[in-house]
Every structure is written in structure tokens, then in C-alpha cells.
Length: 568
Image (cartoon, rainbow, N blue to C red; front, side):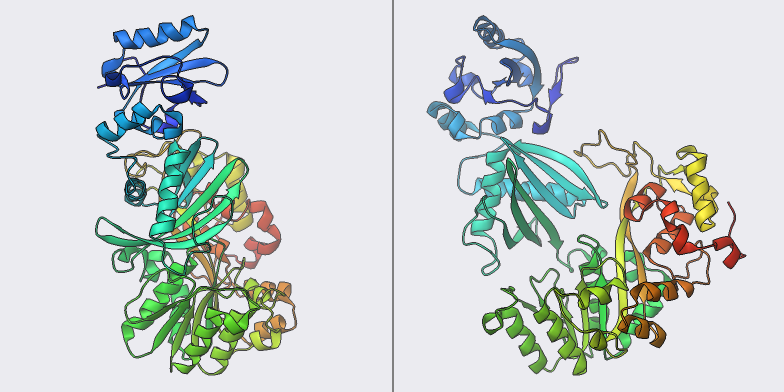
């Protein structure tokens, strides 16, 4: 129990920045008896001061006063104190290099919370417990940001980065390196052993409380440290809410008609585009799952690596090598094998180089259905990406009705928490709201904003929310454009007239922005519809797409061309 009026820390990240321990190890300036080694610690502050942390029972004890007075007598400046949980003491004493041998032995014998923290298996157990906490929060990605002696742990929740905790960098490195070295899938590691000095990738499967998850691991050295990012890939069978349903993802009825029609054909490619973290793979697997449920087609996926396993799909996991090394490239070999395995449908994880593009083209031209992802910033932008110098397909082949079934682009936007969202008029200035009415013809009385504080329904325990705004969000949804190009559009694209093609696509819009009909609407038009329904905050619209004034030329004279458009 903490003492009233005394700061009490239960999270390592709340400690003040410190350079050393003045009570333990080679930097010790004061001696502690063996019984006090794990009840009190002194942080050496860079400017010559010191900060005392202790378990609540040790506060105001004789030892506590002895430590404070001894260090004052030695010329150190007393900067403050706090009580802490025993776990924080354990974390402070983790690094053996900063501890006397006797203290290290004592921790090995007596650690109660971080049991046997120096044993070989403990870094993995610590890592798994940390991952479980992130999964319980609903995090999609985990980021370790190591700078100096501290590793900050941030997670992506509802599409937004949040600070969860911090730990000594040695603990983070031990846990991460143990998982990379001992658990990562054979063949998935870019290097034989973990090395903080080079960029590395791997796939790390873990069993977390009976659920099998896979971490897509990416590390890279940073100035004064290291960044490690891990995407949490949960089993499709264990986490059905992440897959299998276009409605859950956020697609509108008009978009689903186009997608279902494209999936139902036996030819052509469906290309799902978006930036990193936009949910492309989830959408792709949703479409593949829909096909697999029918059970009448042979479906083979070739991925680097396999992220989700779908029942009824033969998954081939391969590791790409150099794009020019065709003779020994496992991805190229798998693509060749695919063409000989009598498939009906192929799912290629991503078209990102000449080999994967040429194989997708060959598969489509030989009568196979292909579903894949592409990094592009719009549906029409897929054409530019496929015909870029990096990928290298020619426009004549790509801009062919037999090659394209559908072009899809999507982003993810946080949803307002329905329990604490606020009328936009109480949050935004009249001028800011008026612009949405002037440019898009929307009735801003239906707009809602996320609250700054959030509520019990949307705030997550353990997350640091200070210095943030619009916290009241709960979940994310897709905002997309689904384009099935007609002959006129393909002709323009084949001639390299992408800007004109985009104008022609927008000209197909007949519905106002508050209507669910998405024909002729880009992803931002989909977001405007959800904004008109009070589902998303204009703040997050502008983060994803930009301010309303940037759309004036794209929209044109909305009120003139669409006389039924709502007026603010």
C-alpha cells in the first residue's frame, strides 16, 4: 500500500531519467545490508543529484534516512523520492554489469515477481508476458524503441501509436534476442543470430495462453539505439473478428457488389493497394476465405511469409532473395510450381518486384484468378505502380480487361467511441465546420468528434494518454475505393493519361457525399460518408486525407452539379 501524499510508481517509465545506481554495483556510493538490497535503490541523476525509490514499507525507515543523509554528506543533491512496486526494484537490478556480485546472487535466490530473472528461459517468458499484455489491449503492432539505457514500448491501438511502458534496455534486448535466436522459424531469419547493429527480419511463432500467434519481426539500428517492430498476426481460426467479413471491415453495400462480382469471375486479378498498416492483407484474406468457403476451387497462396492460415487454402511460405537471382530464388520456383499444380485461384502476398509481377501476369494470361496486394496510394495508382521501373510491366498488358478484375485502395481510420463522442459543434470552430459544408455540401449538424479524455469504454489500462487529444476512439474501419475499370477508363490508362482517368472516374459520381453509394468516390469520399453518419472525427479525416480546402478542385462545384446535395 502506498503512503498518502507520496508519489507511487508501478511503471518503470515513470521513473526520472538516471545515469547509474548509487546504491548497487560498481557505482555504489552507499552500502546496503543484504536484507535491504531489494527494498530500496538510489538513482544517480546526471547533474550530480540523487532520487530514492523504495517499497512503501521502507519509506522513513532507518535505512532510508541513512542512505539520504550519507549521500548528502558526500555532496550529492537530494532530488526527491517515491515509493515503487517490487517489480520496479527487480527491473532496476536486472543488469549484472551494474551490480555487485553479491547482489546478483541475492536476486537470483530471492526474486519473487520476476522469478529467476537471470535464468536462460526468463527473457522469453518476460517477452511472452509483455506480448500477452499487448494482445489483451488489442494492439496490432508492438514497437520497442531503445535509446541509451531505456527501451520504450509503444503499441498501435485503434490505428494510433500509444506508449505502454518502458524497461531497462538490457531486458528488452535479452527477450528479443532470445526469441529471434531460439524461436524464429527456420529460413525466416535474415541473419543466423540476432545482431543489433544490422537490419533484420524474421517470423516468430509463439503460443500465448493457448493461442498461436506469429510475429512479423523487423529491426533496424537507430541513432543512439535500435528500433524493433513486430506485427502481431493472430490465427484466423482463433480470431475470427479480424477476418472473413467485408461488412465488419467497413465496406459499403455498393463496394461489396463490385468485390463479390470480381471475386466470382474465373479470370483476372484483384489488386488491393494501400500504405503499410492499412489492412491490405486482412482484406485479401477475407476475399480468399470467401472463395474457400465455396469449396469448389483449388486455391494456393504464395507468401513471404504466410501471415494468416485459411482453411481450404494450400499455403506456400517462401523467402524472397535477390530479385535478379532467378536461378536460385525460392519465390520464383514456387511461382513456377504454382502454374503446374492445377490451381484455380492464386493469392500472392505482394507484387513488389519484376519476378512476382511477371509471374502474376503469366498466371492471369493462362486463365487463373489472382488476388494480391500492391503498395500504391490510390486504386488508379496501382497501374502506375505495376508499370513503374521497379516492377516493370508494360501498360498494354496491364490495361487489359482480362488482366484487371478490380482495383482496390484502402486506409484505416479510427472510429469515434459511441459512449463519449461529442457533437462537432462543441469541439470545432464554426469556420472549420463551415468548410465541410462549403466544399462537400455536408450537413455538419450530424458531425461528431472523439472526446479528448476518452471514457471507461475506450481508454485502455496501462496506456499513457498524457499530451494526447481526441482519445475517445474505439476500433478502426476501412475507407476504400473499389474500381472496376470500363473500356474508356482502360484506354486512358493504357495511354498513360492517369490524371484524366482519375477525372473520368470522379465524374461517375451521381450520389452526394452523405449517400452510401460509392460509385465515382475515392477513399476520402467513403470517409466523408462515415463522417456524415457521426462515425469518425474530422480530425482523423484530415490526418488521413487532408483539410477540406485541398479538395476544392477535385470536387468542383458540388452544389451546382448535384442540386440535391445537403446544405449545412
